[in-house]
Image (cartoon, rainbow, N blue to C red; front, side):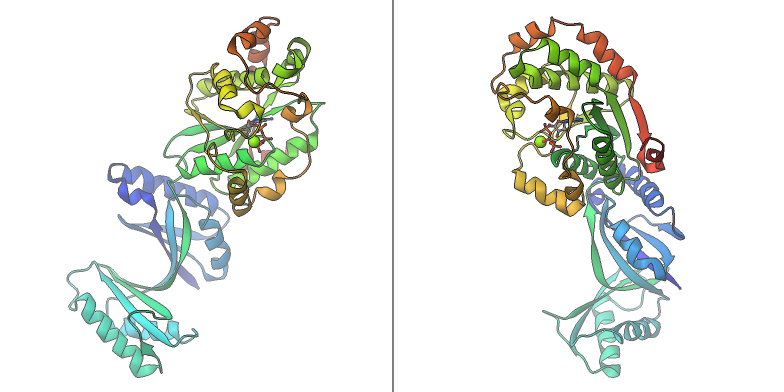
Length: 391
Ligand code: ATP
Ligand code: MG
């Protein structure tokens, strides 16, 4: 049996100029996420319908709930614009439900229909009361029966499933997420996607100081993020030579500051080269020494690119809350080392000075090493399951 899902658009209803772009992007994203299922999308100006196989309905709704740009998902029945047919359908839907009171709510965009919305409510309410031992409660009903009378058909639905909101991924172009194996950066990526950014990950690895398991963990985080976009790619930076050079040339307490300046340099160069319009990361003010405002001045000094820090003003507990909701938390807490933790000094500087950074950086030819990193980045298309080859 086929079933119809009605998709109510999210914030895009307010963006009239970009409406077509938004709807087409949402349509493309839904098609990608549902590619393993039989489905048909029917677009209208204000709504979208997806015809699916009833047996797959529960799994499909779970997948749709992860797609940005959807306000809500509604399972609905479609009948002709005929009051008896509508009434009969309502009774057949309500037969299997456990409730005492109900309310009919009609929305009539078809102004040629011979009854007004209040008249339809009364007519259909009466139809149900005659056939079922129930009562109408217009204030606090157990069940709302929603009726939409449109030009072509009438749609009937009971409950709405909440969608993920936001904008369809892709309407804002591409962004490059500095993705570590930690808790914060996947959450930052998720929040950026919600604003319509097509997010790809940039992961700095330093084998043999960091392990294959650490990389696998980041790939697994990429797989989870991919469920929200169907477009996720992971770009892996071979960071070992540059990191060892920093370790050899820079005093202990400045290692992290310089390392992060190098990360930003690499991210910016790579972003420019590949048309990423912003760099996104999981920095949060005050969380660690490299994320004090003084550190951030010093680190940010190497780039003029837009840096988006979606979790910058959130408490750790708030970030953890989102990580749990989006499914990244359990993977993030697995105990594998990151390049930032392998070389972590005992006392990183909390108020670094820019002049010192410049002085230490003169001690080695970091530019060549930065270029080598940028030129040797490996790309794994997570949405195309390319990770199997490298694990
Ligand atoms: P997370 O912030 O993801 O929980 P973390 O707290 O261990 O991990 P920090 O040392 O706080 O990471 O680094 C701040 C941000 O820098 C991270 O959120 C991430 O965006 C970026 N970052 C750190 N290490 C890496 C890495 N190995 N590859 C890519 N980005 C990284
Ligand atoms: Mg962090």
